[in-house]
Image (tube, rainbow, N blue to C red; front, side):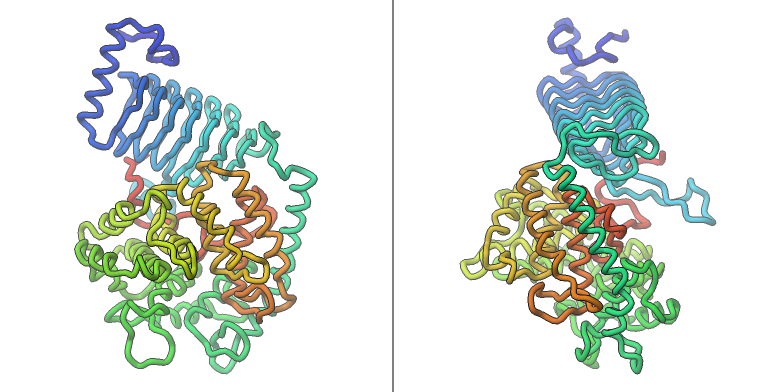
Length: 549
């Protein structure tokens, strides 16, 4: 028999009969017993008329799922949340606490590919995931599309089609959704917000105007190769940096280049036997322990990706791996003495996994699960990271190693990091260390390795005012570092500009500006090594394998 609580469950535990309460408790117990990865908090309600087909489901205290709701994928729903009648929550989705979702709304944390020439029903699914902060009201008939983050205390007005991130405290509506007004005005609201937007817009305009000149100063016409800066030797990384800068600022390959020839040159550097791209110079191909070789999985792979191409050969780092060998490799990395170097190699493994999936290469069973499982089970719950601080460098190598390891794995593959609030605590503590964060000592590595983790964990809304204050202070210093016609130096103050510094600082400016809700004023968004979204794969993400829509 249908009970009114199936459709209006908010007062179930205070008004339902003892028999109804007993039956509801037994229903939840049966669901939990049948699904090892389903958990229900205290005083939850799950209608027997709801359709639940999730891989994992966590429902917080006092949350409810009404009749006709449809839930699939990998779902984490906080406390005091509601999924009202005929709503759909699918894919890789995380709700904070106090999220209220109106009837007939859909939150879809996955999508179909739609390349021409293949019927849609044969296209692979992609999943970037959806994150919704605390205290969010999702009105009726709202659609939230894959890849969106909704900040805390936002309101999605009835009928909204949400295709991009919603800032904390914003009220958005329409198709596509746009800002209507503020429920909670940001701390740097106009005119301060307008000044921020004007500054970052002027920075981006200056960078675009100088893009051709700064690329030309590092190019050797005789060899057809780029160096990081004039007078330096050409490197594999410099070619990748040039491709990324041109894509970011000009929307093209480097000026004067032949795209097909450039693709073939990059592909030709790969060793067919190992899949590695060694540094220029040595005759012998170094092992994967070589730092430059490991990084070339990223720099060359993403340069090819930006031009619509891929590696010519499988990458042995993953193609030759087994679950046991991955665990052995991770165990052998110097987490306690050099967590940055350990994270550097994890980044290469995670990115090699991405390219293997993209190519359709065979991957031994359990390789991906071994990689992510090791990282989750070895993360320190107190710091959210791997490794230990040292007296000489404090948290520097721990935080920088976390960026590298999490970039290539959790961020790139669209999987939530295991201890986001602890990560924020650790990053904010590290950013107070004057050895690395006084204006005269800023370098691109240290700032990026703070900005990215804070951006990656932003959906939690944790210590947001402090995060915004740090982002604003760093951005204020970084925007002054552009050198006309030359770009930016890796060490922000008093060093010669180069391609590496320019590429990294452009990405840093995007992350800091996006944390402050104004990145659209830049007119660019990183798409390569430092892309914010998970990279699309021809295979499902580990975080969600939803059924076809």
